[in-house]
Image (cartoon, rainbow, N blue to C red; front, side):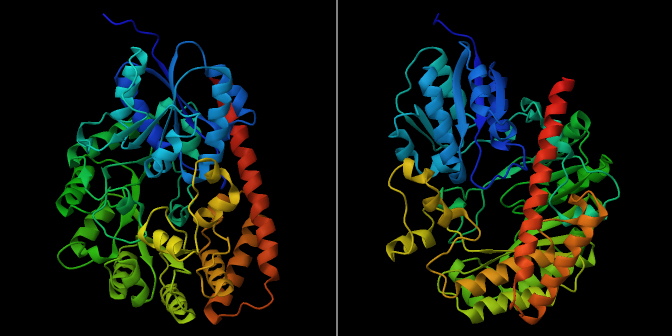
Length: 508
């Protein structure tokens, strides 16, 4: 019988450039649950919740730790490097990286010298195999583990969100969604994944790049059983379904709704949906009634543009009339439509961008319509990104350390970075900024805790509405003032969240 060591695994979520820490790290929860079911003692450590997080990580690196796993988005590379180097200075515990950036650039990470293993692709099963090999002192055959076999996610265990010590703090945080203002009670929410993959062919999408287009879904029965279990375990009354494309299988969606209603489960939910699904043979009036009865509060719609030319360039496979119908149908059933738009796409003219702005202005009359407008940020290795690199307008870092440099990451991730492929950068930024502010997507009223701040926020939203309606962007003093106000509120919210986390730890 092979010698084994103690079976403890530390999973780490690094900090990121954008200071975004709104969601529980579901990817770590999912692989952590698989590891726990395999007999490991798992702890998930969220670096953003600690000022002295390197010291806190040190405390957790005891002799019984088999493996340290770090999930990495592109915006988290710099901190993941910092954490990995620090761990290597004080221990020989193997480090494995996973996540989107690891899937995109496994060779760069493997050659870094401070990461022992890289998992490219789905990690639920691969991390367990790696842990067993390391735990039994069997050297894995390669540094890069390509998880090429699609998992049967219907067999995955119920996610154990309690692997995050501060999970209740996430559950009770206000959602950054307008529909919460229409709900009279405090929301307790969790993200939930019912499927993986999207069959879409969008030229800018990460799923196309990573060969994640094969749709895999949990059965309707499993989905509803898990949602019911989570409501009982955590007191959840809202679920954010984070599937890339929840509505691929119409009959599955209908069955989920029917089971929720039959079981009399009391929660609301939201999800993402393609606008071309709104048609007589798919999402029709009858299905919308069923969705509403089951608790659907909002759908996120990736409309992206009001220009048919731009939609064709993006290979969206939708038409403007599809988006128009989706918004109107959802409004008729009092379901919010949270619409995403992109401006500053390569080849876009001011006329194309104005078509997007006009489409937004036309649909603001619907009380359930909101939108966020971003300038185009390329996914690494996407078709559009590769063309921009070929044209000399974008650079892909040659090694992992270069991804840690803010000037390299900014073109891929920052909202307000200057992008050389945008024909009219200033106009694009004005459309992006003021249309997003007019919808209130940066600060909704329910996220503010006093009447004075609510009044200020509403005042600047109305200015933005006036500017976007009449294309009046001169004298942007209001933008500077609101940016100061928004940063002040963000810092206050961040401070309050840390205080809540510390109080929660003190009660344990």
